[in-house]
Image (cartoon, rainbow, N blue to C red; front, side, top):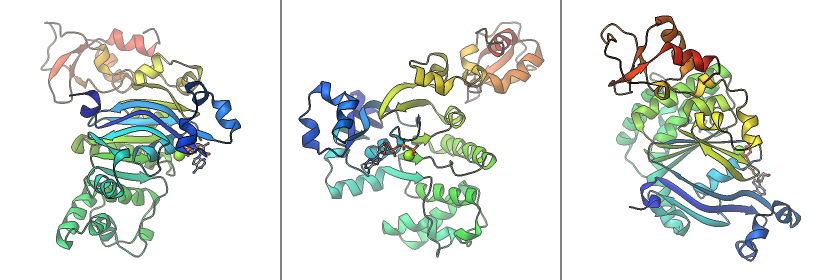
Length: 345
Ligand SMILES: Nc1ncnc2c1ncn2[C@@H]1O[C@H](COP(=O)(O)OP(=O)(O)OP(=O)(O)O)[C@@H](O)[C@H]1O
Ligand SMILES: [Mg+2]
């Protein structure tokens, strides 16, 4: 199977140039297309410039960049809420940009869902019927859609509030309802454009934890936009950094922090403590035969060095490492953790 077919979402040579018709843009030479000043001189805004990436099934792909760098335009093109100027987008092997309007509606229903920073709940409906609303539109029978809505209310921790109205909820709770509603149709690809940006930091951290918990259960393919690097590092498998419409680097959080390719990326990541992005798995060594795996403390290979530092350094001896399914995969030595904390590694 080709890369395009196996990835859940694949975009190739994707451009969105506001102000230009497809034909006008196509008439330019490659040099002209890649000359930002020349495009600007025509009064055009190249909000997405030649984006190429594949997102795997179950991956959390975060898009970061300064305001105006093209993040929202990118997700709108990937979901075809706006028409890209040129390029291709495949979702689950289907050519999104070739779909006619009927096919597009069917594709969206079957595969996609979106959450935005400012989205509207219906004020005159309670939680249950707000969450069931997308299913109602899809013609799902009442008992079925309300049963699904109850499941989702439980999933986002709002059980008991089914009959409440949106104005009786806090901002964080409303955001949970928005998340539940966007999951009602069980989308394969979940687009979230700054869903937590309007919330205060503690609520925001709770919702990030909630999202991670949901993701271990649901295994969606997630495209998540944020301004906040800590948020990105916490939830991303990979992060794409955008600058003036261009993706300047794509990598895992530790790749970006340890090997930033440009000064712009460097500026983004310079304040991130390395211990926050290095995972236990990259410090794991084979288990020595004299380690007492019954009495040793355990750490998880997916945790950050920062999270496990106290346990490992406090233990003085190497600590056993398990993978997320509970299998013992090796050990981590206190010296290795100390080296990361000291910035030697
Ligand atoms: N409909 C439009 N017509 C013309 N220009 C637009 C349109 N929508 C966006 N732009 C321009 O495209 C560029 C990218 O905008 P976009 O909203 O994608 O940025 P963003 O990275 O999401 O920013 P923010 O972090 O502020 O949400 C900006 O220069 C913006 O002014
Ligand atoms: Mg935006």
